[in-house]
Length: 129
Image 1 (tube, rainbow, N blue to C red):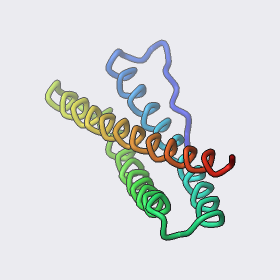
Image 2 (image 1 turned 120 degrees about the vertical axis):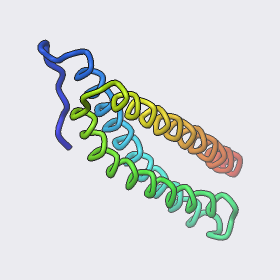
Image 3 (image 1 turned 120 degrees about the horizontal axis):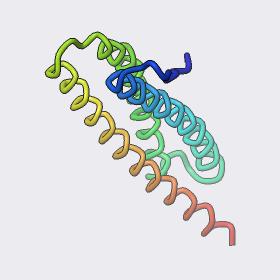
Image 4 (image 1 turned 135 degrees about the vertical axis):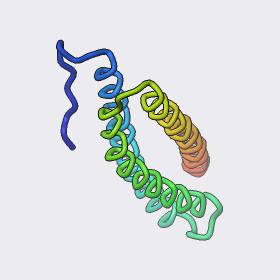
């Protein structure tokens, strides 16, 4: 993934668009890391317990959702690059509102992931003693 750079000659609007793009790139990086976490948690739960436990099923659901979210964000990257082409305030506003909706969805999914991860560690830690 190319690195987005901000230059001294960029306009405020260019900086805003680039910041949104960098934020999106960060989300994708985080989601890719979560993919590895989920895979590891699935292996541990599957080996130590049963693949029919509710936590295992929740992790499978989260893995599917994470993958779907990554697909959406990869498509959104191409769409977001179109924001640079905006020539009026209405266009810029459209992209700003859309990006905020993606930000809310990302935060919601991360909160959900942390709850499942806490449940995972609680089960692992309680069975270790």
